[in-house]
Length: 130
Image (cartoon, one colour):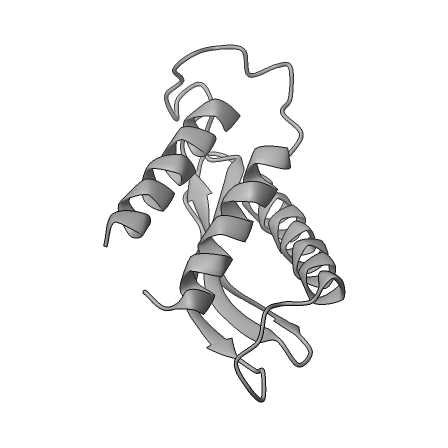
């Protein structure tokens, strides 16, 4: 996994951990029967480095990246919650000018916010081991 892939994974993990949790999901485990596909999970399929030479991301670029990831996650959650009880997916993409372009998929997730955060954490751990 390249530097951009690791950066995208770490930023996604950071943004996901800052995501506001809802008090109504206090259950430790839930099935789709109780929580029918209302959470969205964004999977980054490809990232493209748009920098003209190797350099660290600027504070402005990182701020813009977090802003666009938050917007994509909010749109994903809205899309998924529009079809409760049914797994759905759609393509998502966003670009931070002169930094990177991201292409991914918004998928339904079956479980609580805690389940989703645990799943994202496990994915990040596995990706970093590669």
